Amino acid sequence: MKIAGLLKYIFMVFGFWVIGLSPAWAQIEASPTFSYDTRHTISEIMSTMADPAAWVLWNPTEEFDDDGSFVIPDDDDFWNNLRNKAVILGEVANLINMPGRVSNNRREETAAEVVLSAEEFEALIKEQRPAWEAYSAALTNIAAQYYQAAQARDASAYDWEGGLGAQMNTVCASCHLQFWYPK
Ligand code: HEC
Image 1: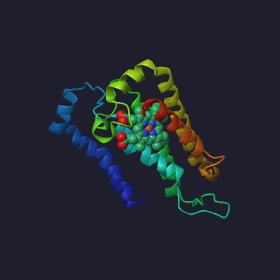
Image 2 (image 1 turned 60 degrees about the vertical axis):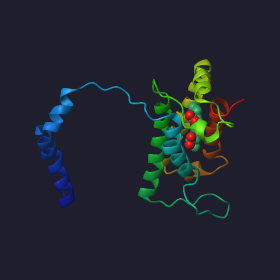
Image 3 (image 1 turned 45 degrees about the vertical axis):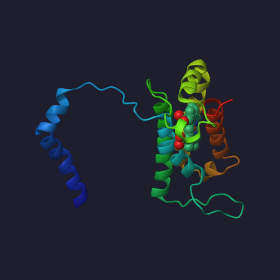
């Protein structure tokens, strides 16, 4: 075992034991209930997680070969990053479906004329729940395909045509058309 690995091991075994004795830990244990915290809006989840992850999956590099496909380096860090982005995208589908999750309340300030109001959104999502769930499931599905592609190091998955990029675009855009923009 290398020295860094050994230190990590010592911390994991004894560090937790020390933390276990500290008053802060005792306090956490004394209040064991947990409930979902849904203070962040769908809009925030989209802009902090869905969008950054999707852009990396759409454009994994800036290097192209002659036929316009991305040249993806055969490098562990690179593929791990693509896999991690697929995990984030898959979890976005879970997060936006948590009970109590609300839409954006910032939208009125930003672009009230081009998007639904928060109330309109809440009404729409109640009324058209099956469609919302279908788009969410499609997001889970595309994220799972990206995850598998990263595990298999399948560079063709990142081609726009024939790969997953155009499909993902359809998933994002279809849900936005129905639930983000006014009719
Ligand atoms: C299940 C439906 C659904 C799917 C799928 C979905 N979105 Fe969204 N997205 C929304 C809704 C609803 C809003 C508007 C949220 C609001 O303003 O409250 C939104 C808003 C956004 C925003 C604007 C956030 C802001 O700054 O206010 C971005 C960016 C975004 N989505 C990116 C994406 C990307 C990229 C994908 C695909 C990888 C995606 N979304 C898939 C429902 C979805």
